[in-house]
Image (cartoon, rainbow, N blue to C red; front, side, top):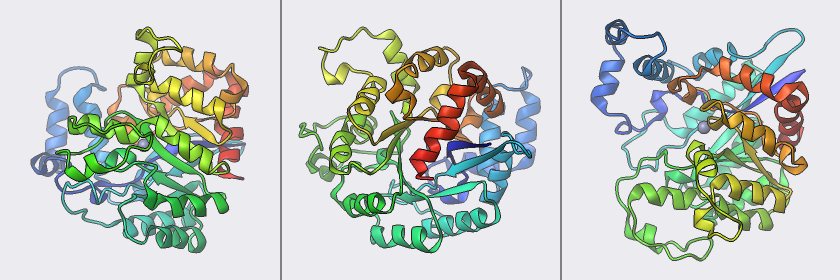
Length: 360
Ligand SMILES: [Zn+2]
């Protein structure tokens, strides 16, 4: 049996803009001695905050994507009876206004392509940003010549998934059975100020775009309701809204009182996504990051999976190596999810649904 982890990353610090992580911190953490010293200095348990952040940085400091992937592969079954394949999602971070990216996107894709040729467990996706020139050409190149299997979007980087510049990509993806994976949880972006252009861009749902803090603005781009129009316009384009809305929205679902009559704004993104899944046949979601964060989310997931349509649209994923920042380790949580779901449900989200999503 082949299991699928539908959401992983292998990009390294070389693919991240220079100013994204404070240069002093990068310089310090690059020194092995500093990492050793920080670990020794910290007198508590072996998996505390500082340890986790150092683990995270150590992964990102890896010299190659192959090195990062080896670590990931070591957390999952890889035996004669059970193998694991992973969708690897590149990041186009060139337009986030955080300075130059040391190794450009083309090189990032090239390295990933070589890794996928050597290791059949790698399922490479193409990193797409609406603001990049010659987008369609780039997508065609990595799909046709190098066998990449899907499209990765990251709207909080500063664009709507409905951006008109993405339409040729959606058309091509739909015609060629390439699924889309789009980041869908709050925050998680670098944005210094709200520009005039950002305010003038028409909101996909026709809402007025009012000046807010940059952080709030990223949520306007990322909002799952933006996908309603895309789901209708491209009914055969499979779109996965990653992270199932994210942990803050799962907390909101648990903690806030709301009814079907309450306004869209008050609705948890989790509910927006499940509504989208019910209303369309091409919307998926994944449990990456979110379900690795808090134990009691598993109870809610089990209840949600009672619904047939939702059960057939949820994908297993972890968000490696972002998980190295969390208290719960990759393997521990992956096994916990599998055991709590039971083999039938786990196979549904880690084998059956991923295969359909990937068009295999
Ligand atoms: Zn991710």
